[in-house]
Image (tube, rainbow, N blue to C red):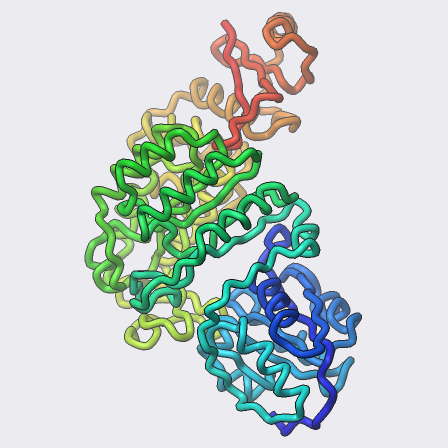
Length: 529
């Protein structure tokens, strides 16, 4: 970039471009508080947008504040939009100083400086960003790349303005920084010691967020339970809060001790969600990416957590790890699926800038643009990956939305097909009720009437208030009226006409639309003789 003209620097906008509207940006509000605390005579505004907004709409939100400096955190989900947005900001406010931080800019600084940014902050910005603003306002010429120092002071971002901005969205909290592990596909570890923040301050922040309008409070700690004693302490605090909020943690299943598992079994239903990264059950792949997991213990602990039926469990797999072929991945998928978690996320290897796997593994071909996702490798062809993409599509459209769960479970049991193969058959086209029923009905050993019964019950449990597809409707008015009368008597209230159905067996089923399982997200259905 050409040399900047000296100017008065007093107004800063911190722009956060989130992946979804429901997300909020913790880093933007931490930086805003840091600027207020550490910079001299600077005003700062936070602008939160999301990638589904147009470039022009996001730009308009920024230029409405007429900033001298715009700071942006860069990630794989927003990096492709930034060049156009930055160009529009410069067009509308010539001379605007663009400062980038975050993983994308930190690990690909030369590209961003050459094409789009004036300054790059590598690492933590709590002190580095306000220091840069101070130096700019004093007429200094700082280096283009600023390697950040660790901020020893804990910044509390939960201002009244931030808390008021949540309005049903997800709030984030950071109670530690770093990760003790060194997975080569991740940027959070590196083997550095984990810095734990003041537990008393964390509890104060949690209490504040528990009384906010946030829907879910999500911990951004990469391995929350790497310190078992501390994790136990915070789990106990969260369980004891007087709130209806849900708290989401990323945890390693094999690190849970018996004491913590026992404590978690006492949590109110829906209070806690756990996201557990298994990534693979194929040992050579885990070794290749330096992933250290005691798989038998992880499986045992996941089953114990699920048995309590009070905690939502989310499991992650990654397709494309070194040495894992399509057959190997199928086995990983089937083992993960059979655990019965509430959500099974199937992701694809991303070769992130700054990751060790990108530096060391030259045989994996990936997209040049973010998110740098695998295209092919010596172990997975493009055709193989397309097969896995079909499975991912069907999984997201059915299992992870709580749709047709008992029907799919019945089909798996009756046909003895593997989960991977079943979802492979479902993938590729829209997973409408009609198509799901058609695919499952063609499987060997599946009884059409039993399948239809499961489909009807599943539809009612997950599609509250929706009209049932015609192929599910059994027109037996006397039976329908009798079942509706019995249902209303049992519930003690009138019910909607869509909340009762006749089953192929001659039995009836009704939906208790005021009784939703907060853990599974499914409504209670009752079968009547």
